[in-house]
Length: 449
Image 1 (tube, rainbow, N blue to C red):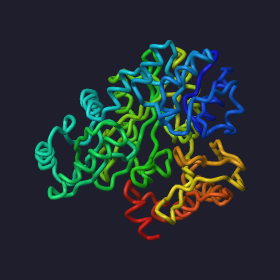
Image 2: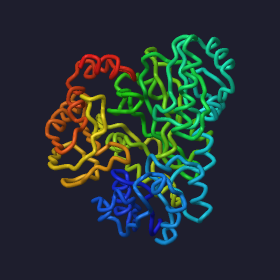
Image 3: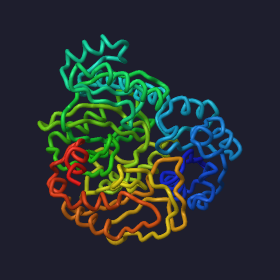
Image 4: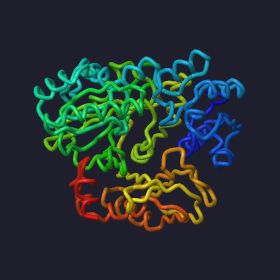
């Protein structure tokens, strides 16, 4: 096992990794920007190092400064968390070239699976169904028009080098295709410094289901079942749950087996997530691999009892998985609500500020993952998430009741949050009966409010 690890991230995930390291008996070094100076979680690290100014480019995205901090602190490994450099193959390669173990997949795998067009080629070779579309990046508007006619409208235009809804456009008719292509390229260039885009068939009103996988360096690979992430706004997840409430047992088994098959074929190591769309007929289509720990990983931890961050660290240290596929059982039902400092009543306007009052929910089956406390000022420079509220209960209906109660207990003052939005979602009959899809929040729920 490692003696000392550096966490190349901030906020909730930095605290999550710090806690895992402490439980494994590993010293931990935290890096921080000037905007995060004085953040509460830094007190729990064995050492903390400032790596630059508030902008990400000067701190959490600055590879030379992170490597310099790792050298000064004499660490053996670097955990990237999620976001920032977590899926940057160059960062993974630099870490290992500088003799720091990167706690994540090999850089070759990150590079291959991070480009969606290449990931689809891997899926095809692994006999995993995927959404029909262009075989590679689109090279001309004429090519795009030809492919769109072949696969049929509506089509989805997506950035080849990224995710999170950036560079993504739905085009429903040929008359708007050229304008949609241009808009997607501009957004992809701004977000990922790569204007490459590709086309795929738009699956109308699907469910978004993802499968958590773990693979060690000895060739063992398992799935930890699935999460449903269909509650989204502008392709950003709001609520996640496990098990996926609408999957048949047969589809669940086939979906999870496909994820393992894909991970093995890709030579995947460490924790990762295979994401799929599932249509109304239970057909599923691979869309991408997230080669990192996910924001929603605690949902899987609650239903399987397996600490994913500890597993990441053990795998990176060369230890084999100490359980088999048959040992991993889904127990009960779990939900996660992402609590963001945004104002849903004003088009989800960012609402950074200082927390003046914080009442946290508790009781049986409730988990709160967050780095904030009273007096903490949420900086405007980064992601708006202030915490993740999770619940676990024997059944979905019981878990919903626990979440309703926990959301009512949660009180955050000093800034606007999405907690009220989640209270309304968990009292909505469509959500209670699982009559939702990836467009439901904007198409139905927000339209009615």
